[in-house]
Amino acid sequence: VRVVIIGLLGGALVSGVITVRNLRDLAATYGGANPELRRFMLYGPLTPMIAQVEARTAPTSSILLVTDADPALIAYGLFPRKFWQTTVDGALQPMFVPSSHPSYPQRVPESFAVDWVLLLTPENIVSGGDLWQGRGGR
Amino acid sequence: MIYFFLLLLICGAGLWILLNRAVPSLSTLVAEIPTIVALGVICLYIEFLILSWRGEVALPALALLPALLLGLLSWSFLKGRIRRENKVACEQPDWQLWSVLVLLLVLQIVALLPMSQLPLFDWEGRMLWALKARFLEESPTMLSEPFRDPYRLHIHPRYPLLLPWLSASIARAGGGFQELHYLMLLLIFSLLTGWHFFVFLVRRIGLLSAFLVSLILMSSSIWLTAVINAQVEIVLAFFALLALTRLLDWLEHGRWQDLVLTVMFLVGGAMTKNEGLLLALVFFAVVMLLALLKMRLNSREAWLFPGLFSVLYLPWLLHLRLIPAVADENYLQQLNSAALLHGVARLSQIFASYLTRMSDWPLWHIYWFVLPATVVWSLLLWRKSTLGEKVVALVWVGYFVGVTGVYILSPWQDISLHISASFDRAFLPLLPCGLILVALWSQRVMTMGVGDGLADQQTRKVDQ
Image 1: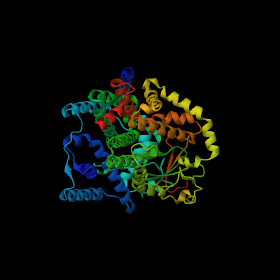
Image 2: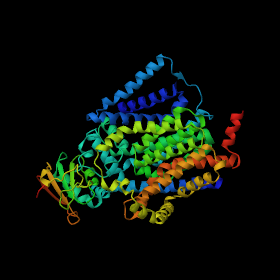
Image 3: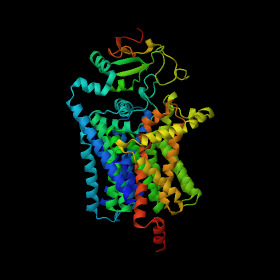
Image 4: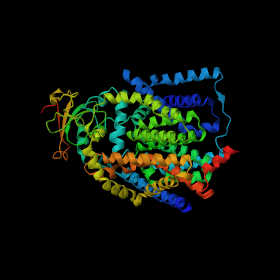
């Protein structure tokens, strides 16, 4: 029993020290990085898009996001901008709810009263996505 | 921000005093801080859910419940229904106990100090919980667009919102959302968990042993990583620990107040994460089993469990009805024979993935071997286990079976990937509870041998 307790304690302390050391390393790396690198550490491949939207839109903007990518990080990174989301395929479907659901009729892109539309695909993600002003339609 | 914390403490302390019909001594008050905070959070959140039906809930509106509790307290004082508590919380001299507790808490704060220089990095922390906190900060009601409009929904819209609400309330009271506040909130829950864990164990296994076991919990990589990543499972572990320790207190002393508190903490857990609902189900099953086996409680007491739980959980259930259903989260839809057969067929793959995850040596996941081993040990030595040990072991087994059941029904095609992404988080809530079992067994084996036990000790006390 003593061996088990000592083993657990020793293991916990060793693993804890490793974790805290990793935390300190990360804090040092992040603290020493320039703003661009910091942003990349947070948003990865979405960094160009985040930068473009921040530069071109006001914080109070509303944006229709047309993408198959998971949009949650976008909405968090660009808060307080409001995002409506549809999938690329048909651009009519809410991201997380089946459009066949009887309570949620399909909407055409023009029905979204938004300031901007952002199309994000694997092809245009490197350049920050296509961002244009106006209602849902191109 | 002080205003919000004041409301929280009035709610928690007021309810504690009303339940116990006693004003706590200073020693008890300090020992019960985690309980008081938990009660305050649960009460204010339920109040928010109820008021939220009328639209946005401004912070001053939350003063309704604390005012009501203060009124009740004043009335009870005037009627002489509240006495002054004079019992000592535990046998240790206070200064020793509190010095060691402060040392534990300071150690964790110092170790995690670099957190304050970092933003919120964790995917789940940002996308799930902090994003929803920002929605609730912007519009503090469950009726707002991000929780209703299917085109504005974000990932996992039906996840419980206790932590986002708490974070949003602090943000509204403190001048806006800051990731640092969010991270510190999780750190506070971690410290409160360690606090309660230590105080609970001191009464049972002594100061030094309690310190060592608390150190195991608070310095382990699994725990620290969860705090650093601001994982909401820390909050669930906090409620799970409170619920379990209250259940053990109830089995020991038979006070109905402990049973009520157990249920309240389970409600807190269920409003934090859906795994909390599973935990409540497991607790209920264990209590019903005890009732059936006529161990300690009668079935009427056992039914108090689901009754009170349902009433307190109802406000969230009503809100949940209005949140659009999401296809990929509908595990109940998976409850058909074809999906079950498919899931059972990959059971070996599930257990293989468990083993892979448990063997992540750099992060030293040996707990996931030691804790189940202790549970199996308790079950094998059923007759020699105390009632408390049996209960902890059964809760562990029940939760393990439940989580494995969820993996069986998982809609993920690659189950190894699902387990690899969620194993630690899925089982983290039971880490403190499992360590309690290890501590109780270890203490008993070291001091008395397996053949004797606390059960015998308790019997002797009763005989005396």
